[in-house]
Image 1 (tube, rainbow, N blue to C red):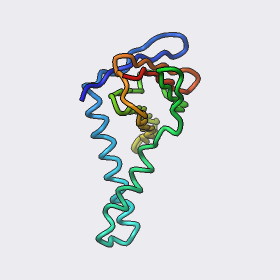
Image 2 (image 1 turned 135 degrees about the horizontal axis):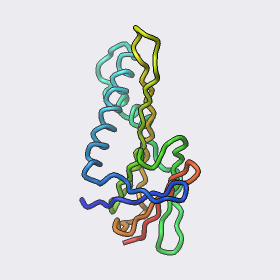
Image 3 (image 1 turned 60 degrees about the horizontal axis):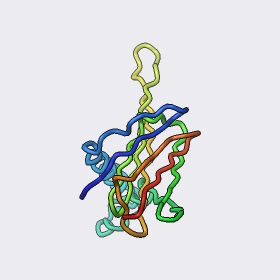
Image 4 (image 1 turned 45 degrees about the horizontal axis):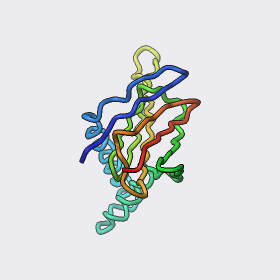
Amino acid sequence: MSSQSAATTSKGSSSPIPANSAIRQVYDRIRERIARRAYDLYQQDGNRPGQDMRHWLQAESEILTEVPEIRESGSWYTINVPLRGFAANEVQVSVEAQRAIVAAEKQEVTASEPGRASNVLEQAVFARAKWPIDVDPATASAYLMNGVLTLTVKRA
């Protein structure tokens, strides 16, 4: 399964997206978040057994959003993913022949009063696009502008 990194541009400057070697870690984080949410749903459902798949699918739909629109222009596909509040260095893009994964994560630690624990605010967006037909990951380019990631890739 070959994949390609894409570069991003934010405020007119270009920044690289983290290498795809880390994308496996992104997949692991997505699965971990889905598993935690599915367990929360299980507990909210009174710890009743037999609903594992329903809880997993509901958690997956809450954590991993599908990109609603893939635009086609000639032999190119383009997607837009809203990422308000994220910087280019907080975004990873993985493009594979059949799909793309966009992951944006940040943690903010807020100062606290003496003797109290600090607060950690976590924000994450995970989005998946399934290409209508195979694409060439080597042609992928992405940029972040005005809180929207735009990813373009050519059909294989």
